[in-house]
Length: 179
Image (tube, one colour):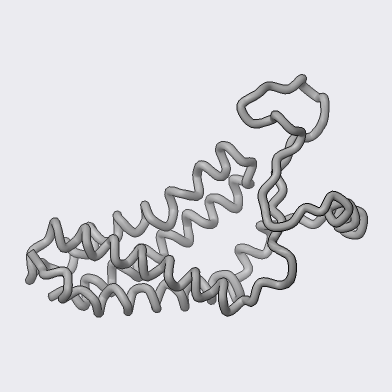
């Protein structure tokens, strides 16, 4: 088996590569531009209402009791609302947390590869194992969001597509740098 300490380079490089790729995909590519809808003529009213209720830094469901309960068909809309904490969360901090997540995924993928593949394993075998684990890490978690919380299937499929790219990049790095 490859010694886990020998895998620090593919862990770090793959985390950096996925971080850069996701930045490009979210900022420069057009496919995520339609993931979030806009409330028609409602921004000001909704903002005023959220401020009036003093909702900050949490996730909320409406109407109350919707989760785990039942509702009368056609009674009212059901929804989820995520409100960020007061003030502006610095983007640098969010990106640092996201990079830490990428590094964690790469570390877990490295651990799995370390446990299953010996040093000197061929590129394709390393690619298959690390790619499969990476798809699960980045993509599978999106599905329950669509099933249970109403995230659009279109947005979910795009996130799963992105995870295929992240998996190919991660697997390519691990295959290339495998000891």
